[in-house]
Every structure is written in C-alpha cells, then in structure tokens.
Length: 83
Image 1 (cartoon, rainbow, N blue to C red):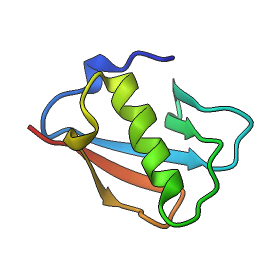
Image 2 (tube, rainbow, N blue to C red):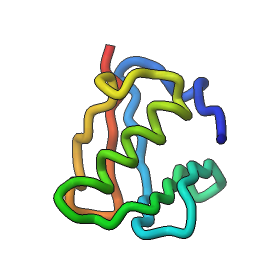
Image 3 (cartoon, rainbow, N blue to C red):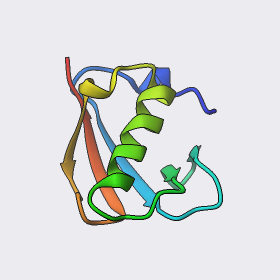
C-alpha cells in the first residue's frame, strides 16, 4: 500500500482517477496524479465507499475526514480532507 501521509493536510483537495471492477484494490501515485483501483462495481455508491476506504488507509486519516466534493458518478473525483 502506498503511503500518502504527506498529502493529508486539512483543506487539501485531491484529484483522483478511479478504475472500478479492477483486478485488485490499489492506490497509485505517479506523474499523472492519484489513481485508485477498486474491485467493486460502480453500483449504488459501493465503488465510492471502497475508494474512500482505500484512500483513508493510504492517507492515514479516518474515513469521516474524506469528503467527496465532485464526481460521485464519474471516474474523475475530487476529495477534500476535512479538519
């Protein structure tokens, strides 16, 4: 698991590209930005919940501190880290 604790600043916004129905769950931070791969299908918000779980673990913050600001039904999402 990639450690992204250096990005976990209150008020920070994270642009994330999500790939649902992937072969494995993973968080990748590369030159293109932050990518999250989840095995969950994008039905009923299940993939969003899986993304929040993976991101919170990688960032070292609780799930309640991650707020989905934009892209609830899109592959491109914007998360904000709350205080």
